[in-house]
Length: 117
Image 1 (cartoon, helix red, strand yellow):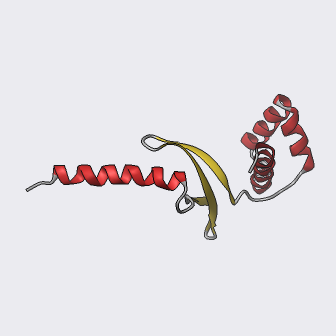
Image 2 (cartoon, one colour):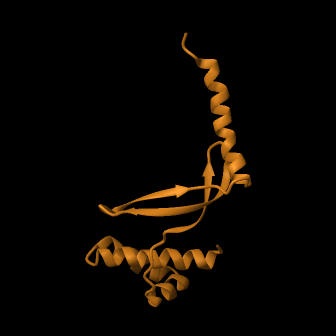
Image 3 (cartoon, rainbow, N blue to C red):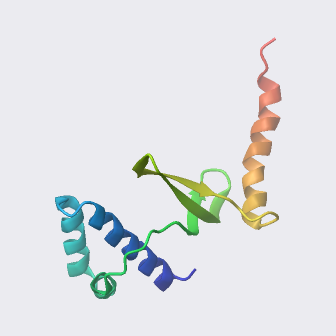
């Protein structure tokens, strides 16, 4: 997903969230500030595209594995729609999967040295 697609997806999700809370001053202030700050946001906000941001690709910095590009999916809880679970799942065999396996391997290797007898 490129930057323009990501920006459109995030603004559409912000429209969705703002619609759930029409009187929320924080959402209104955020939208007003972003509208003043950038032409790109202003155009995307004016489109009024309302859509959940339920999947995509995120760039994350892991303290041991470093910079990772990970696909993710967001799940909304039916009983608590304000709460979501985000699952990051590296593609099998990808560089991200290999780099994420490394911290676990290190932890497993170190665990054996610190056993209580």
